[in-house]
Image 1 (spheres, rainbow, N blue to C red):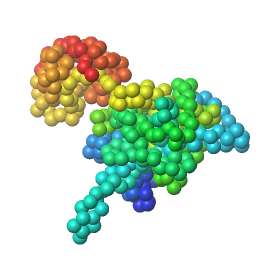
Image 2: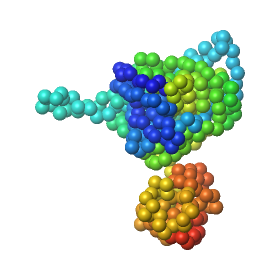
Image 3: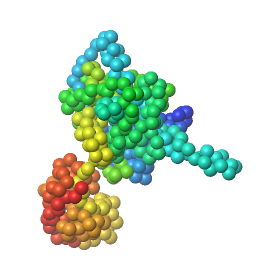
Length: 409
């Protein structure tokens, strides 16, 4: 990313997150202004709002904003396909696919009155913008996939279609951890949906195309091309729901502020990723990242069905050991370096029923060691389900015990 971000009309950056590796993550949505100056690597959520909190580790889309914190670790998977740059088939495919890529505008409460006015009337004003992809049309409605950081904190969301028409959108559901959200609009106004492909089939070197709205709606449906630079990347981020690691596809296709929520497609016109962020560093070309389609679809379908993502719940507040003053660790084993301390217990939770107490230190789950809260959360959200029983390895003082907990929802 550039070291200096000059003010740009109609664009704003998401709040910055601070990843563990010292780089920064940003979620962008096209907003009223982008202002900033960075000297180190930075990860940008390609939306345009600031919806994650810097203090929250900047979920970039700050946590609250944005999610997010991140580092140069990311992953990009694109379907294994090759194409001829000069082929008119690619242009035809892009022409067809781009119609299903929309602009997403985040409107938040604003004040109409000026400094000397008695009029305090407020109305929603544009706080940022990003992109979205029409996923399916069903029962008279069209469902649009975008990034959570593009619409987070919105009082109202508008969708700008390829024909220039703007329409109000309903937020069906959003999930900060996966940085995904689903919108719904009147299906009669929407073009046909895009097909989603298999991101697991992608390999480094596969050709991909990114379509989105960099720097706002004035440059809507901009097309950039590149290759899959790497697969299997992870990017640590801070979100409004805590620390997390996003599984991403890395690409050299240009992904800029306002691209968040747009489509990364293969030469067959299939969506194999949702563009989400970029990492930039002085003297280094920006690295783009997209959420793989095979990770996106289960979340999107659950959001459409439930309005939220249901995940296992233990019912404890946690702090990493390396974040605690030594005073709180004086009774723990002297050589204990990894684990998470319980700093609070929901009295109605599974943890309370199982006898978990404040200042217990969790060091493993089902026999797998956990070094920090992010690792524990990742295991819970990817390896087990609600109502499953798990065994926690716990230190109470210098005594280790195993505690069985039946997870809640």
